[in-house]
Length: 351
Image 1 (cartoon, rainbow, N blue to C red):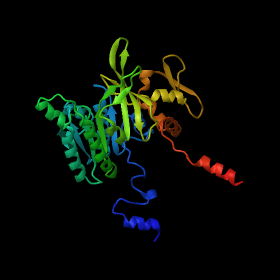
Image 2 (tube, rainbow, N blue to C red):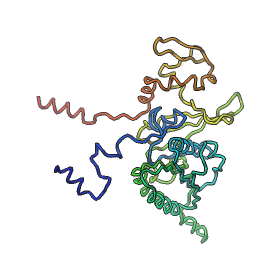
Image 3 (cartoon, rainbow, N blue to C red):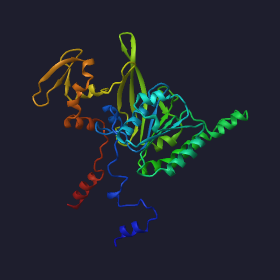
Image 4 (cartoon, helix red, strand yellow):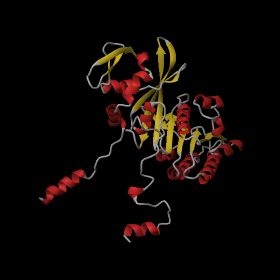
């Protein structure tokens, strides 16, 4: 018996395994959404999507944070017909009709109202202890940014006005406890959070709740918003996904997703800029767009931008392997051989 086999046999942790065969480092379960560039923002790939672990959407009020969470839940339930949503609610701003907008079966959603961090910590740990690895569960917390600590509530009842120094510690404890369970049991969890402005000459957005959630998260989006106008009339918003932290996507990547008041999420948001950059689409004249035949270089029929936002226009492009590879190279984190240069130096020394 080799030393490695002896160590594995002696381990008291049943999940211990040879790293090359570890279930925790093999290919992750990807939950693909219906919006290609949302998949890119999650994984760096058009074919990717949401993975098990902690994903956080942070931003000011009315920045589509809960809607993005429900988009992920809808995709998860579409892939797994027996899946359920565990929905922790501290804001009570998401009516049943909002779930139905995303085609989420509300009969498969457990709505759990919460009032403080400690209450959440106790309940979610009980739930995670009961969930088994093959149970199909997605957890949504809406939101951690608006959740008080138990001490803050008790101080208010007692009429005290002292600053609460316990909340950040309790949030850090919460995420420290739940993160291993999410990975071990392949559970995706989406946390909605708030942001605040850093003090300084050039203030930037800071994710609320202290460092606990930031350290534990696999993915953090900070969401921005721009008005989408038709003339002077506001017809919707361009939400900008700023990738603040990711294990898969290059940090500081910016991906736009358009949402109109009439049509909802534009499935083809964000694709045009990449298609132009990769020469899959060209602008033959101002205001006009045309696909480029990748075999002949021929410029095909011209269309106005609004007419390009269809499945007919994009379906051939997004399945093209060259386009997929271009997107991956632009957004995906790549890993090279860190020790490669040292090996060259060692070979030079040997000669």
